[in-house]
Image (cartoon, rainbow, N blue to C red; front, side, top):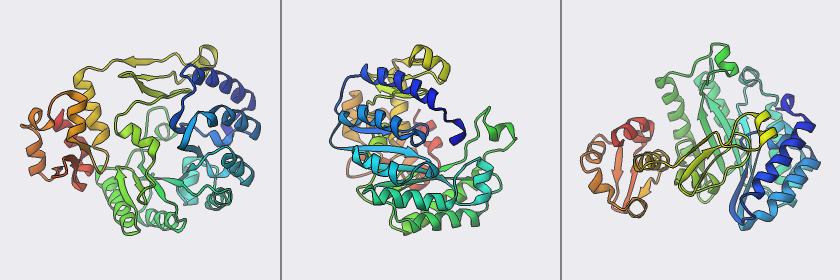
Length: 342
C-alpha cells in the first residue's frame, strides 16, 4: 500500500534480493511470479531494474505474473510490464464496496479497478486475475452478490476468492474482529461457486476459478507439490526435498540477507501429509501413478482401511481414470478428509 512505500528502502531491498536471485543461477524458469507484497508500488526506475534481472530468466513461452494493487497501475506502468514480457497480472481487488474497502484500509476504489484493467488490456495483457475476500465483518450476502456481479462484468479469465482470516497482531485482530462462522463462510462460498460456475468458470482449486486453459501455471506448481524457488522477505521455497522460509524481518533481510528461519528435510509422513494437503485442494486431485512414483508404494494399498470410508461418505472419489479427488462436499470439508488420511 502507498503508505508503506519508501524509495530508499525499496532500493536497498532490491539490491539484497538480486544477490539472492543470483545465488540460484540464471534459470531459465517455466514461470516467474512477482508478488507476496505489492511490487506495483515500485517506481518505474525500480521496476525497470527488477525486470532487467527477471525477464532474461523466463523460458520462451513461460508465464510471467505480477501482483498489484489497482490504484498503483496506470497505462505507463502497464506498457512497461508488457514490454518486458509480463503476460499475466493479478489485482488485489478484495471488494467493490466502499464500506468494506474502508474497513480493510484499502486505498483504491471500484473506479481504480476499471482503470487498471483498461490500462493492462491496452498494453496487451489480457490474462488477468482479480482477487476478492469474503466473510468480512458485517458483510451481507447482498454485498457479496454485488461484488460477484461486478467481478463478472470485467470478463477476465481468472478469479480468486478467499475467506477472511484473522491472524494475531493484525489490525483486524487488534480491533477484535473475528473470522466468519463455519456456516456463514460455507454459505458465502457456495454462492460464489454456484454463480461462477454458471458464468462459465471452472473451479480448479479450492479458491481459484478460471476459463479452461487459464489456470495459474505458477500456482499449480505449489498445489502439485513440485519444487520451486522462493526469494525475498518471508518467501518460502521447496528444493532438493527440503522446505525453507526466509526471515520475515525487513531489518534482518536488509542487514544479513535471506537467512532461512525455517528449513527442514521432511519425514516420509510429512511428505505424505503435504502431498495430500496440496493435491487434494485441486479439483482433479492426484494420479495414482504419480503417487506410486513419488512414494514407491500404492495409495490404494496403503490407505485401504481409510479411503473407502471417505468414498462411502461422499467426500472422496477414486475415478476410473486413475485419479483420486475430493467431491464438492469433500472440498468443503477438506480438513475432515485430511485428518482421516493422516
